[in-house]
Length: 215
Length: 215
DNA sequence: AATGAATTCGAACGAACGTTCGAAATATAG
DNA sequence: CTATATTTCGAACGTTCGTTCGAATTCATT
Image 1: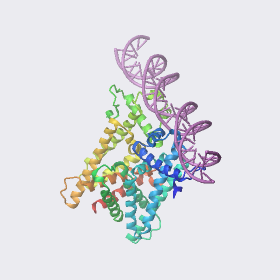
Image 2: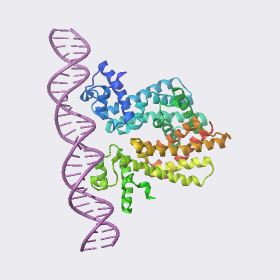
Image 3: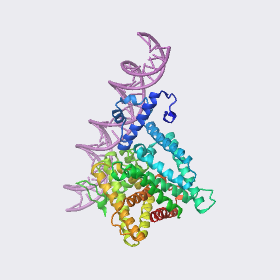
């Protein structure tokens, strides 16, 4: 359970206290990064927010970039685990797609800060960190592309085994619709109330599914 | 013609030489910002790229933030001017929407650097700069929302005068589809060749239009 | 209470950054 | 050629940043 929070470090610690504080740290930092941006948030800002010393933070991460990586990985793993669980109980492809969008947007609005970071800052990562997060993005995209292929098969009775260019474009377009929400979604607005989130994601599914199927 | 490039400065200069170099500066900086990100590009990086001195750059902008603003405004004005011209020759609302998407993506791929900056960095702006760019975004969104309203009227014979919540969501979704391309579009890929750009934007229009109309 | 491990801290380092300023160089016009 | 305006530059300033390190403190176990 806790291993998704471990540092990439060799001599990582494993006490419960450590993991609790690390999780708290990641969430507060995600909020800061979401509000001020990764580059405009200094370690000193974080220390102030967490009521700890500057040096003390470095007990929990090796570099600022690792901190960004930890937040990104945490968000990704959470949303993907939750998706896998929900998809397990469903067999219809179209329903699966609805679940994916619902899950994505649901997580987006309840962890807006972390998702803003993931959508907007995750390509500030370099080297190994970049590769690891990009792998996860690729996996997520794969799930969606295969789902779209299934829908195409069921809908048109085609025996497509290969993911075609239009399917790729469609998948990327849907991600665009969903991920772009971080630029306009505002939890303080009345019309963005939790009750309306269901409506919003339902509408996105409708636009996309109608459009995709009727091509 | 040149005024869109003027500095917000009071004592702005107006020689032709000045504007030529400023335009060159903006384009090269857009490329740098697109590649390394706004925050990771230092004024020293820019000076190196432009083969000028560090201090010499400050003859063309007052602060680094103003530089970002100038790039953003330049991109926005170009894409909106070009759109306005094209829309003038068309009366059918659906066709107008196609033109909007085509124009947007066309400009996106031919000025990828500047558009990456616009889509990804423009909310690093603060104060007056932020307000000015946000106004332009609002104007652009307004155009799309009114277009969608027209389509709805023509399609369902409704007499909607007000822009409803679903129309707003639809407009933002379409922008998401289009703007998200900056995260995956790669001019070096064979399947992203100029000839295929037309296909990509056509497919986006199809997905969106089919989905939107069939709601 | 004693011991060792886990956690926090103050103070400081060097590096990189955006910006300034007056002088130097270059172009322009009379 | 002279004089005036435009453009470039070297050198430096002050600030902020990420990171380090050894000492101090707190915690868990016996």
